[in-house]
Length: 361
Ligand code: FNR
Ligand code: LAC
Image 1 (cartoon, helix red, strand yellow):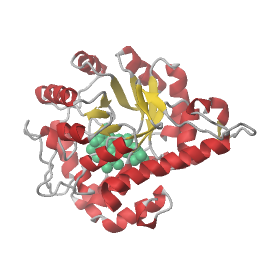
Image 2: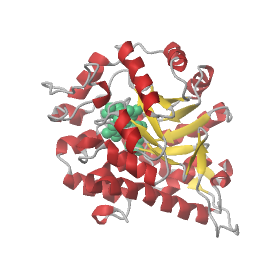
Image 3: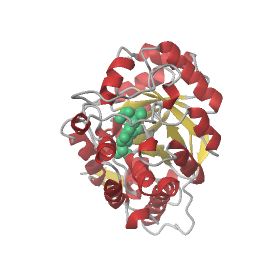
């Protein structure tokens, strides 16, 4: 079902690597510094074990659930990732169509190559908007208003990137956007260009100049006051920060280390999920991303306390190999793998994925 002859998402990455220019592949694939956390994100799922139940009737299985009250066909969402037109000409439009065909949520990055209005217009399903807070607060507030007016049904505030992590592959390639591609949502405000810089990543320079590194929990309350839609805080790896998110009005947190792209040496998300879910005690929803590559990883995440997972890079690999159909194939592959894992683990519903199903080595 996956394009490029791939049998699984890891093989799909290889097919994408063969098709993409190195500057794009490296930007998508890379992590910060030595990429320890990047590798750990995937490796940590393998250290969680599934204590499957036997002799449970799993002849009918239901993967559907809700996230922030929105019904989705499965607990697998599309993570916000920047610059989808580097992967395929339709870019974020292709992703939005794929997510809506899979009946799940697409989270659109602030740094998309397509405006939020156009993405919401083609999507038949729920779109959430990931927010970066700019030094230019007027532009940030206008962006929030635009996203809401376009129909985005939640805001996802990313809090793990006061500066961009140092991705050495991007420094070497002097990563920048090619002619014709921009940060479409910020073009009108004068923040659309990610230009070539000598000796550094153009995106790192863009972050340093334009994003607000003084952001604090007070600003979360500010953001809460300028939007009507639910707010998720993305980039949490500590129970105390998850509690602070509750105190500041968040409806959910995304346990995330940004796919190992920010602070190298931060823990794998799989390793911190259970303590965070435990601290939150069901008061808000806990989502997770980072290294989810198999249906069994999804089942482990649910059992450790996540409401749903988000998928980052594999969507980009799907787009690169086969556009909208490729991104859809990634989601459908994970759906089939989760369905299979649930059957083998004795889970007929996602609510059967409880903590007793998992242990960590
Ligand atoms: C990201 N991520 C990200 N996060 C965010 O909040 N805003 C963004 O614009 C981006 N951009 C982005 C670009 C690329 C190329 C990648 C790989 C990642 C992080 C993303 O939302 C998510 O946290 C990770 O990608 C999850 O890890 P996996 O699934 O890629 O391992
Ligand atoms: C990244 C930013 C855009 O990880 O979030 O590249």
